[in-house]
Length: 112
Image (cartoon, rainbow, N blue to C red; front, top):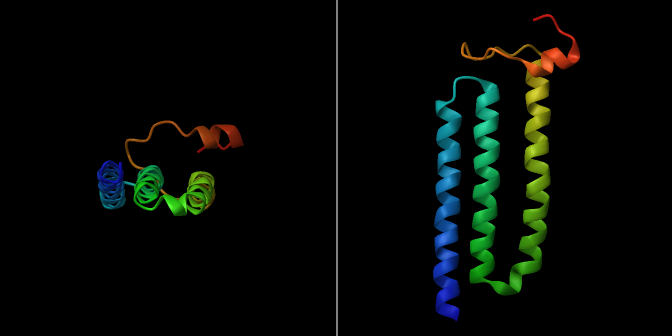
């Protein structure tokens, strides 16, 4: 049973690392700050959770601590990215040329 958990843990950690790598690549490739925040947040949240799940398979005695870390990451990472995106919108950060609809501006009543 220990060998199976080691293999599963290793695969989960590799998958988590791949998502973290793709999130870093998304930060470079995306055209504007809003897309960069989106790519970075979704990929790092999933990548971190997969990595934590892999560590939990390798070290079951750390499960409670890893669950707490995952719980806080699951809530704080998307919330912080939403706050950053609203702050960027508020200071008038430029959008990508392909952006056609701005729902936040519509909700706030902006004419831009």
